[in-house]
Length: 311
Image (cartoon, rainbow, N blue to C red; front, side, top):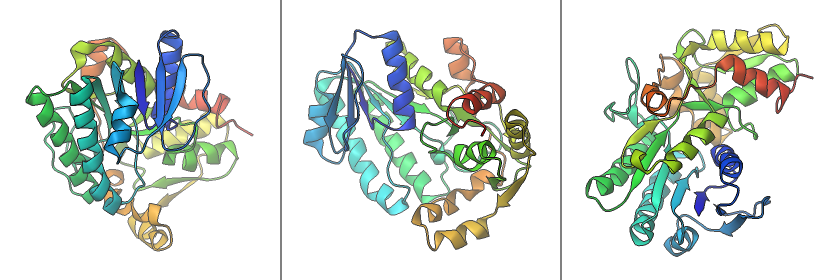
C-alpha cells in the first residue's frame, strides 16, 4: 500500500496520478484533514491531523511507502510550532511500522547560495522558515544515519503547473496571460531562477517510491535549468499569443501588502530568492534515473492547453 499524507495538494495529486497510471492494482490511501473525492477502486481516503500521533500512526499502518506531501499555512510562527512536532510523529510512525518514508521538501534551508544548489550544499538558512526546514531535515536524517528508519528527502525548486494556482507563476503569469491581462513578477526579472514542473514531481516521487535503493539520502527532483524572469515572461507571452506586459513587485510593496494580508507578509523574508540568482541543480536524479525535466516551453504550452487556457 502507498500512503500519501497531505493528499489534495499539487504534488500529492501529481503523485496519485502516477500511482494510478502505473500501479492500478495496488492500494493507495489518501490522507488529509478534509474529505477528498476518491476515484479508483483501490483508492481510499482517511482523515488524520499530522499533529496527532495516534492519527498519524493509524494512517500509515500497513503501508509499504509513505509519501509526506503536506504543507502548512505560510506563517513562520506556525512553522516553528508545528513542523518539529509533525516530523517527530513521522519518525515515530516510521519506526513503529517500518514503512519507507519519502519527505517532499523545499530549499529554504540552503539560504542564499552562490552557484548551484546541490544535495551536498550546507545548510545556511537566512530566514525563520529556513531555520525550521534545516532543523526538521536534520532531525530526519539523524534517524536515518542511526539506522532507525528508511527515509528519503525529495527537494524541489519553486514550482508551476498546479491544478489550484498554488504557485505565483500560475497565478501571476500564466493565468494573467490566459485572461489577456498584464503579468506580475516578484523580484528582479533579470536574475536567474528555475522552476520545477509539478507533473515532474509526481513522476519523480513515484520513481523514488519504486526504488528502495534510493532510500536514506537527499534527491533534487528533475528541474529545468535556470532562466531569467524576463525570459520566462517572454516565453509565456509568446505561447499565449500576448505581449509580454508585466509589472514587478519589490520587497517594499510586499511589506505594504503584508500589513493587510498575512500570507503575503510570509513571503517578505524569502525575498532574497527573487533578487539573487537561484540555481537548483537536479543532475544527480537525472543521471541516476535517466530522466530529463520538462522544458519550460513544453510545460507552459501544456498549461495553455489544459488548465490555464488562453481565452
